[in-house]
Image (cartoon, rainbow, N blue to C red):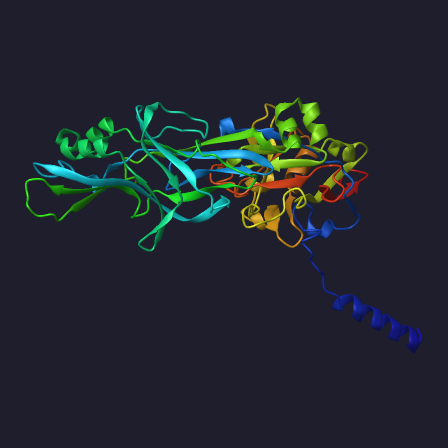
Amino acid sequence: MTKLNIGLLFLLLTVLFSCKKKEDNSVLGLDVQPENDMVGLTVTDTTSVFMYTQKVENTIRSYNDSYKYLGSNQDPVFGRTDASIYTNFSISNNLTNVTFGTNPVLDSAEIVIHAPGQALGDTSTALKYDVYLLSEKLVAGTSYSISSHLLKSSGVVSSITGKVKIRGNNLCLVLPLDHNMAQYILQTNSNLTNNTAFQNAYKGFYITTSNSTLGAPGSGTIRRYDLDADISGVNLYYHDGNSVSTKGQIFQFSFRGNDAVKFNHIDHNYVSGASQNLFDQISGSESTALLKGNSNVYLNTFGGTRTKIYLPYLKNLTDSQKVSINRAELIVKIDDIVSPYTYKYGYPANLALIACNADGVEELVFDQLETSDFVKYGGSYDATKKQYVFNIARQVQKILNGEVGNYGFYLVNASPNRSIVIRRDDRLERVVLGGKTNPNFKPVFKLTYVKYPYDK
């Protein structure tokens, strides 16, 4: 061998062994396909994505926790939404045998609820707040939905038109409470022996703004409230009628504690000003909905709607040979022409893509079940590209292997985290996405895979 050939061979070996592998999980990932089988990759983004909007609000649970929503908004795309609150109240600190003296005289009474932030719509709009007494007891441990109704009085115990206000250093909703009711609470000691007796006598409130008159699209607001905040509760201001002193006292009944039960009731009125395309999808047949969904699909607040997605041609990949999926990305894009981002209407921080079984029931995809790395699974809002990206490589692989059926998917306005994806009642933001034939915001299903012409 000549000196020249030896030199060339040495140079080639040096280059070969000095090269480092470069990983790019953002495109190819190593989600399913082993790293040593990365030869012969095929990438395609031409698979059809069929989508349409479904109405599902009757099945959405409202959880018994501190944050609840109250208000009314005339959404320019989704129509009118009214968020109301059912809540009981109790003797603070679980006190027993409470008494306000032999002759307590009421000065005033009010309901105060802390508004810590987050709102949908125009917060400058004054709303009509009506408070009704419940005649049906809230039952701890009951799974109330956002469509649940409880029996209530025919007349209101408080009604005021206004907005939230500053109380101390807190933004609060302050509602005056009926004088006769509050006076009765003060003077009836038999109902103050403990919280069981108290809540048997006073079952709670239904607070609603559904009687508010809203104006142009975008008017009205729905706010998040913290019923467990220290400042939140029912305040009675009173003095001793037997005393010459005019010094008054205050007692607060609480919305929190072991006996607390509260949930949201949500009304979505898609007839009142909603997009015609949205209304046609949720009220028509599936064939009509699929046709209408070609332009846009809609994810409403509080789980009012979800998007059904079909990937019907997946099995075509395995017609003649086995396929190993490396990455399966569904990219859905926000139509910011139909629904631009504004201070009134933001976009959800994340969404979730879950599976549909043969009975139409929601199920977690295997990409949620088999990993704690939700960065790979995705679902977070990309503010630069105005889109959400999901990687469901494990689910698609199991479909191709015949281990699970291909009954479609649901795109839902919820956290992608498997432990809380079921929750929908805490989502105030909503979003409009492009459909299959949308010229600017068409969804993309991008597959990266390896074909095997023979068994390995």
